[in-house]
Every structure is written in C-alpha cells, then in structure tokens.
Image (cartoon, rainbow, N blue to C red; front, side, top):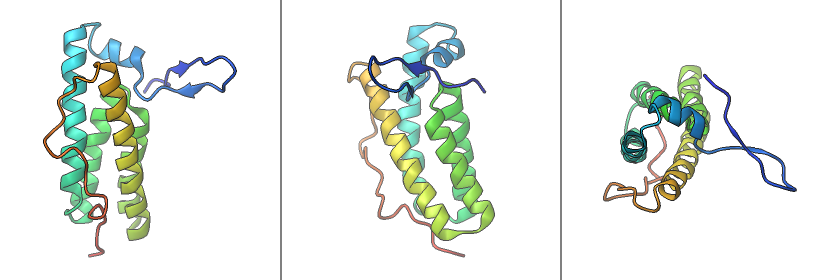
Length: 143
C-alpha cells in the first residue's frame, strides 16, 4: 500500500488527501474516463454497503467491511480503508460498542470520500436514490 499523498497548504499543516490522486491515476492507468467510472462506482458502493451493513449480523458486517476496504484501497481512499478495517477488528474482538463506534467512523469517512469524489467530478457523481445511510440503524446487536 502506498502512503497517502499530501496537500501542501501555505501556513497550514499538511493533511493527507481524502482520495490519493497519484494512486488513483496509477490504478486507472491515467485513463480519466476509467477514473470517473471507478469513482462513481465506489461512491455508490459505499452508500449501498453501509445501508446493508446496518441490518447484518457481525460476521457478515465484517465481510462487507472487508470488501469496502479493498475497494477503498483500490482508489486511494485510505481513511475509508482504515475505518473499514477497524470494523473488521472490532467484530473479531467481539465488542459491540467498539463495532458500533467503528461503523459510525466508517460512515463518516465514506461521507467524506463521497463529497471529495463529487467535488472531483464537478458535482456530477450519480449517487443512489437514498444517499444517506441511516446511522441510527447502523448498529449491530450482539448475538
């Protein structure tokens, strides 16, 4: 995995980019059309996956998080990948509270990534009809 690219902002600390543009460019072989398609698919996938995770038992939620982690790594959405990995780890540890907190972080990182994608695509990303996951339902009951 490559390190996140940094945004240089005069007078401010450098912050990791939400989407690692260099990594994305390498993964799409510099093809802007492919980049757009991959970003649009990822934006839809995050919404749909989070919606589905809300009602899943922990093991299935971890599997969904694993899939999302791989997709996030593919486009350089490192925060989403780390948050998805935290969901996997929380499920493995068996902590319901930790898992719910990790799901909340995953939802926040995904929202941030989708906003960055929308800005990158000039506000022309095609989100699913129900854009916002229900965070009140994004908790997993203990088995």
